[in-house]
Length: 178
Image (cartoon, rainbow, N blue to C red; front, side, top):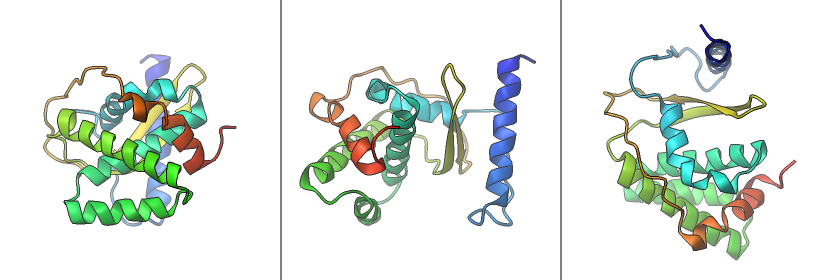
């Protein structure tokens, strides 16, 4: 087994222990599935067009957080989605520009989810981003379902009006980069 593979297994094992000890997942069995579509790979593909707006660890971690919100929102019926997003908006600064940027970016991500990952109905329960020094390792805990073939969306660019505001929104929602 390669050093990289061992590090990934150790990271996953550590994440699993953290999940099992958390109050949120108390008395729940956490399993690591090594077959089929890995949700961490799916999420990485989902955010791929936006990663240029996240040039460092803190920005990438914030981008993943926004993507998880959009992914999970896309799985809800419209009324529930609106309630969920209203709750998320309460956690961000209440200035008009930040609220508009949040809405525009989340809506674009929801459309991307529907367009390229429409057959994937797995809910993301938790995630962890680790800076390995050379790149970022993303671990994801999701619900399980019958897995569909892995979609490979094109590396399309975000809409210019949205893409230019991603970094500003991430800073407004999660604070400035360290």
